Image (cartoon, rainbow, N blue to C red; front, top):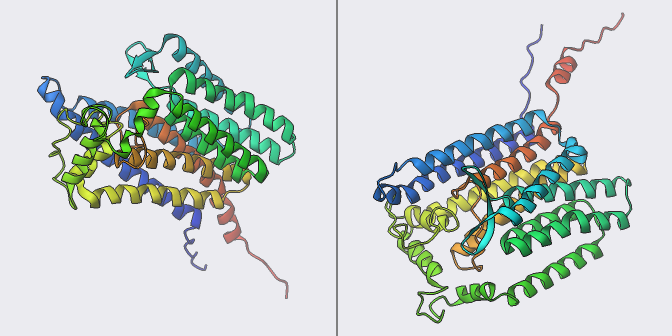
Length: 393
């Protein structure tokens, strides 16, 4: 009996391995940085220095289990049906509850507490909105609805909730992240080019109007010259200046893990919105570029999975979700290095925050579910290899 030759590793399998490796590295770096950024203050307050990192590890475990369930047990075609409606409806309930009974933090009502557990529903809402967009675009592409009906559904199921969240939570950052993900889905889904141009134009007008029409958002443009904030750099420009100091202090190789100076109550949100500045201080330019490279690897692997999807639905799920997540990462990094105004959005996989890391891992599960469906069936391969052709002489 001839020895069976080992099967070559498929391109989609390689992409999934790269994706998992990138996510694993980012999560590990995140846990290390959360511990570094929080342990000193906790110790100074006579609290357990491991409290926050252990809490983050629990959320990572929850998100990992959820990602594996989505990856292995839920076929991605299920998101074209009632499953998306159920998740979307659940998130809309969270959105309304946040409006009525949410907790205001730093001037914005974005937090919802259910007993002792707090969450930021916008992190889940962005996933729900992109999944609903994918469902609408899929129905349009297969001819189940025409362009007029697709436009109506996008207006009422996507635009209205997004506008409600923007107005009630004053959340420009999440609005931009969702808008980029939605645009990516519609582009991959084959919507007419003129409609995409119109969406971009309306989006730009909304961003300009929302920024100029709100004093505190306009003040964020002080990042262009934070020392000229009217208070000698101690006002709205303070945190970006401290972020600059942290990155400058890090130099090429950093001051070492745990040795950041700026995290000692100088840099606000050092474990969340500005954790990249602490990372740059402790790990240096080399470490910062390594993290950026991991996000680029995540994007590359996800787009390869999107390209190898069995159909356009899978391509939209893998491509749209990846683009949305990586855009959020670079939006956060851009704020920390002074390229963009501060938006208050966490760095996926790395920033402290349970809802952030869980929603990011949910996206990983969605992308891997597309690869899982695209992988060859091992049982079919074995049956094909065992096939024997008998010829009569």
